[in-house]
Length: 114
Length: 116
Image 1 (cartoon, rainbow over the protein chains, first blue to last red):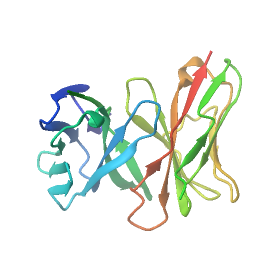
Image 2 (image 1 turned 120 degrees about the vertical axis):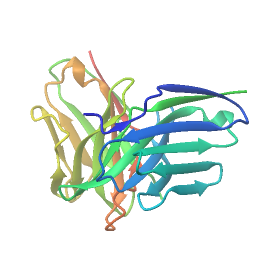
Image 3 (image 1 turned 30 degrees about the horizontal axis):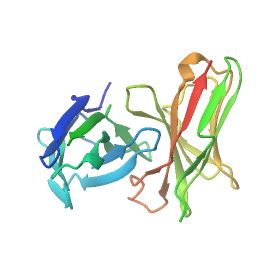
Image 4 (image 1 turned 30 degrees about the vertical axis):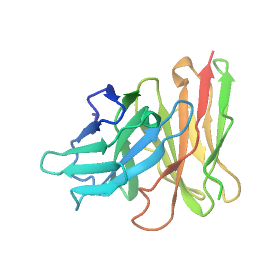
């Protein structure tokens, strides 16, 4: 039962253009959403997050949008840079049986072409 | 302030041996989480621990796997009698003990376990 889904395994974008990564979830109990970035042979690095009471959060080149009715969130990166090439994981958080849990999507490999 | 530390970074074990993976959380963090990532998949939650307590082990296989976070020292994920299917990257994350901020998990570099 995949509660958090990233349906695009990979995405290729030209440098300077906008990258849009998508994520869908099924569990209405999730109250916080996060994006992590991962380079090969490294652990995931926290990028940006959004509370379920908001619909947008912006941090520099990164903006996360949340559409609760559609149970969908997206990460926008603009302008895209070569260093943004990495695997991006969407994660959702919920308090389950007294513990705050993160549920991850499968990841989207973003490649920025010069 | 050192980040989350994991060792070893790479571990090779033959089938039937034991694997011990260590995780030292960030300074000031008392919550530790272990995740497993199989090739081409996302991270899957295994276990959540606080000092001397297992809070949630619902993601951990019932047999051969155990975890601890003692009062002193790192958290240990132990896999007994490893099989080829245990080959994966194991990530540890830690978070502060502030209520409502437990979702802010910071990850270590991972241990890549290879079972031959």
